[in-house]
Length: 196
Image (cartoon, rainbow, N blue to C red; front, side):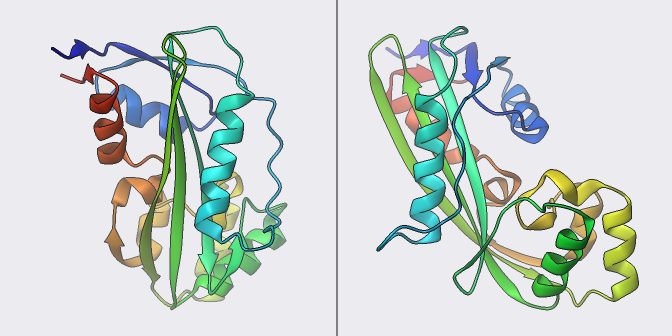
């Protein structure tokens, strides 16, 4: 019989991931991870594999206090094989949004779930295709000046003001937000936990 899952540890500073897990009715303890992301693709490694690798790295380097079930994730934006991480500054955010304007791109969210009590790791990646509306220079500047793009891969969030930029999503909406909830639910079940 499955055990009721009531609390998890989150190795991420993302307020969106925190909100998503809390939305499942879970108590969430946020811990720091000392993992340093490097968005350089290794030989034979694609963007989706890189997102999964980052999630596993964040989980492995996370502080060990908090509930025994730990969740880590990483999101990358892929435009024809070009990776877009978080923008360095406002000019970089404007450059990214201009690149995405009127085009389709992929969002890959890698995740890792560690059951520290049983020493088990599950990881994977969920991807979605997102098409942007054509964005004017004025729209891009207004969005960047509002500050929303600065802590997000690809310089946008699909929630909030960023939703006005998105024409369509093909795939897991929550993967685009940064945490594929349905896949996580399947992993929790595989580990013997049930989320009410």
